[in-house]
Picture 1 (cartoon, helix red, strand yellow):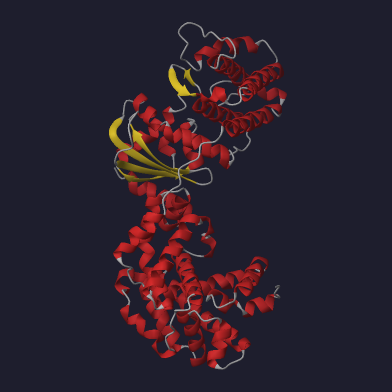
Picture 2 (tube, rainbow over the protein chains, first blue to last red):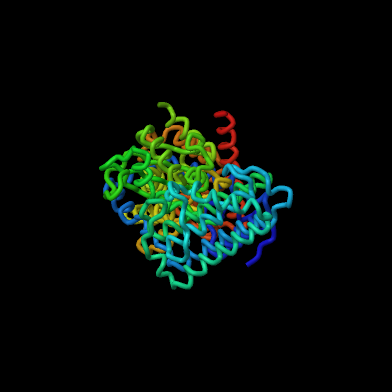
Length: 339
Length: 198
């Protein structure tokens, strides 16, 4: 059924009063998409209809509340299968690779928020790839004494060696190293991702380690964009969902590292936007979630930027219900994730 | 610390209202936000549903329908088309009409009794919004008889415009235009109301 503008206009009153048959209502909706002035009128007439309803407020029986809300519970989150996770990780590598392929020759010496030039940053990532490969027994990498748990320090020799090469060679060396590791993880049929590995002295599930690396590559891609004066890019919702999940679940560890664990208490973290979600997490490791002391609400991308230490917790737009000091601790603990 | 108040204001600014923040939280799977919206709007939804269905059981089913829809499809809320209150009231009316039409048991009340329910209303609980609504109902009474009857039949009894035409013995085209004209006048009253607030 298709309506002319005038036919649709005639039906607007009946439409906002739900006094049309379904095919007519559908045809009007289609017309509203085509004619913005009709849409404006429909909104205006609709607000009168809804205002009429406000006079009729009558509290429903108290028992209805539990019946309605009891049926509506969050579905448990599904964990991605290893291949989905690896595909998301690959997407992140490819994104960084694309950004790097586009760095003008003279820009490689520009400073980044990571504290290195773009060239040095990529060299650092080569070191990280070698270290991560060694964690999965896929290669040898022996950090200099004293840097075994130092994410930055252990890559200094690599950075120094790469300075002697051209940025283009360094970029290609990173690609070779990164693609080799992900290829081996894929070739394992996912079994390598079921392992627990020691990452910088912290026993971590391999999946979490991979997501942490996704964070790292996203953040450094943005570092390069920033250095080039280009706009930042938000990860797609699938990657955000994976990253926000790991960032939220790392809170108990973060609280401990930060020296602020709160045994017996939980925080509720609500992250808004595609790829967000809701988590109730204990504020001390190895605990069941206890009573919620605080709810922190923020945009999911902003929250991930805090976790990546590219947004100061103090500057995060967020909403707090409950203890504001606990909320501040929670956000500082989130930022420890990257450190 | 005063950060709580400050921070709430920040997200409210981003989303336009505290209710819109709650809908965004529902979209993130936050069931406590759903409970907050229930506490704010269940009376509104239930009242509209009861007025249209005239049946407790059906009205409660509508409440269930509306909050289930809110939980499952929070993305259907479009801030450009009005407030959360407007959206839920619209949804409540639509679902109530659906239920009435689907229910063979539904008994219709006659046109004359259509306004008596307003007396049962818990107007005080809704504050300013109810005040506007009461004035709007007063405005309904000042509509020309033909428009008033058409609007009441469609709004309060969930009649289609064809049924309105049949009941009032007028052509369908006339029923359509009476509904539109009547609502235009009411929207005008609402517009003046908003101007007088600001």
